[in-house]
Image 1 (cartoon, rainbow, N blue to C red):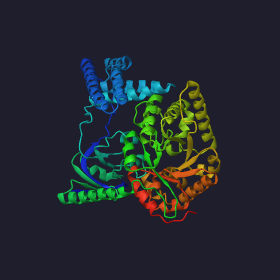
Image 2: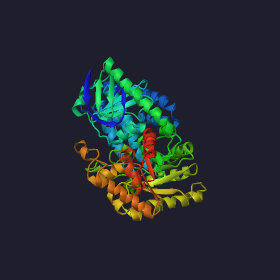
Image 3: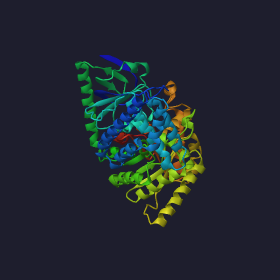
Image 4: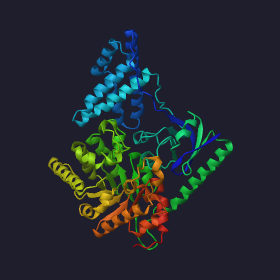
Length: 542
């Protein structure tokens, strides 16, 4: 038995088998080869093995989603693409080793696609990278991930990108452990959405975790136990039983409205990122969805999702949750949320750079595709749209003009949509707080994103563990920003909610009630406990 310590990032304890996600080294060397026929055979066999793997992935994906399965059919065709194959064969015939040939041709073709203006063609860059990396792994002897894994698993990785986290099987994963990361990273946020414990930032201690075996984690304290004894296992199982008992006790708040003792009614909503979260929304009796993170549709894909693909997802969300309202945040990529096919350049300060509404307004074809899909889906249930990372009034006005233009298009095409669609803006920069009175005249509601608002107000990079202790959503300056926003909303006759992580901070519930917050949107697992806290709240509204 060995005990390690990291930082707790998602509450609760869990026991499970280690599922180690290894970051593979796909670097190559330029080696001169003499046996050309042997090298050509290696390349051919690697291609055949890649096709076999893709066949298995197709069958695995087909069980869950037909459209996802079709991606692997496309990848099979790309493995035999003449430009790719002929390029590799030509380099091998020029005495280059197969790995270097695949690496070089991959980069050349991927860059060519990436430079194209057409978003669909640009997305082929990610496909080429994917199939080439698969062939490189085979040539380097790296085994394919086992898809038959079952049981209770704790994922162990150096770091988990949001695009990797959302693809994990939520039925099997009971916890996360990472070498890097912070409790405000998006992967930690997703762990909280999934309602599973997470421990991050183990640093050097991470190297002491074995590749397999049993592990126990505590997402509150950051404690990790490797190969726990039977006594330790019994203690953890007792804690898990108590967790489950508390959850059962909270069920008495299902069906109850979140109204304070002095009569202030609040909606308690859910933050979600995919269709698989819908059951948790319903099971925990959410009043609405205060935040649907539409960017995870893009992160789960290896290409630009089409209008129809997005439409089907938005339609299913609003239909299944009807009559509840679903607030869908438009694309919020950038910073730590990266989709390779977007080609977002590396930046010195990504949190301050090319992200969210800035990308959308600069890439109108991508934005138009999403807005068309959203408007079409609005016909099938209750939906609101909100725009993220607004720091200039003109950004909001430009987004609204584009939306009106698309409404005109759809009318001309005879496509139905909700005419009086409610629009909102996320307040997550100090600039948006300072111009909240002007923004309020353009929208029906504010939703405060406290994660970024805290980051920008305190000038603290929430992904930088060296300054993580300074990241404090309870800081007086942050709370003042929230209060100013609530005042601007009230004075302009619109409602104001909070969808950032601090919405679920029970130490702040009294304060939020006192300034007249109308909605708190949290991870589904936190809904009932928050309702309980609000119902027992006695703070008078200011």
